[in-house]
Image (cartoon, rainbow, N blue to C red; front, side, top):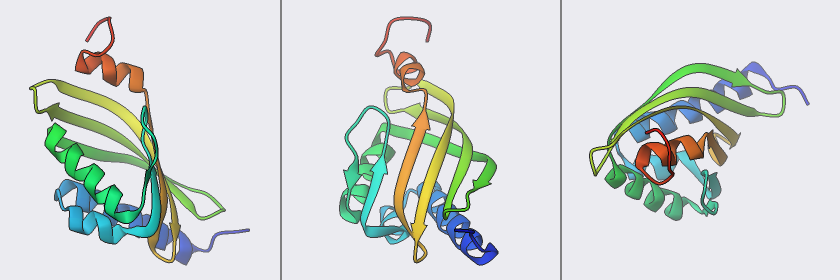
Length: 137
């Protein structure tokens, strides 16, 4: 199936709305960006299922990362309707630890809403920065 430019634009618009909501720390806007039965797959944890649970998950993220920014460095589009954003993340935790890493967020969008979000990054590296694994931090 070939994705039309309209579908590609809609998927990217939904992903951009998600990033805008995250940067604004708006759990209400995050909830509006996701489908009712949405899934968020985040490293080192079980999937978060359902719009309300996704919003609650991000409320916890905002408490943990008191400063954070996702800089989108590149967009990727696939023929099957997914869009991915390569990002450079910089944040500071509520304990004062600085965290910097690159990630890829893969969005499956249906009817203008995010149905599935896969967040992919080197979780061992991040745990090391957080003091959870031995090694250089």
